[in-house]
Length: 259
Image 1: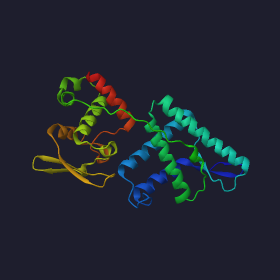
Image 2: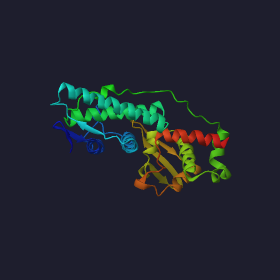
Image 3: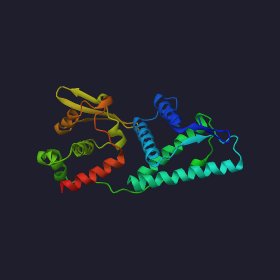
Image 4: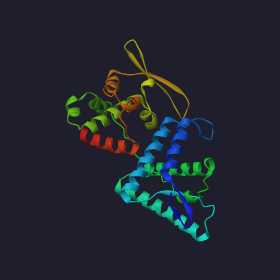
């Protein structure tokens, strides 16, 4: 562990991993006492991947530091470090990755949650520099299809054959999502345990993390075919993995290809 002027630096990703583990195990709960949802856990992991890629691509050394014994000058250095980090990270998200405000804002929001975890749960006393991280938001147009357009994506085998493997996954996730009308986080969290088979009928059973309501729907044949196609997904997930920004960009591309 490095030190500067005798002040110990703490490994950022070590504590972020602990943040994920504590959130998943139930040692860290929501303010209302409920467990962290699987959709939120999915976002935590994607934020970790984004930060790791950012550090690798930009050569940025991400660390934490207790402010307990910092001098006024060292406090200013620490503040400037985090302001610089925020500027570099958001520039990277917008310019290098082409992400939208909502996705960038989501990751910044998770960073602020992690910061609170470090201060309140782990008592690391790393200061309140996260207050300089601004959460951005924008209204993204909702992609809607006419029934005949959705039917084209479902049943046109020639069009499907013309797509790359990844774009076929996009089509399948989009078609399945249009059918079951779930939030993106709930869609990505679907597992084999959400399927119930009675006779020749397949039912999708879902509890909404946001409204705490249970839903059961009978799946049409084309949706069942999608699930069968990805039956060997890792960790028992029903569908291929995406983050919300990438899927949104892919779907726009898919609609363009479909004409």
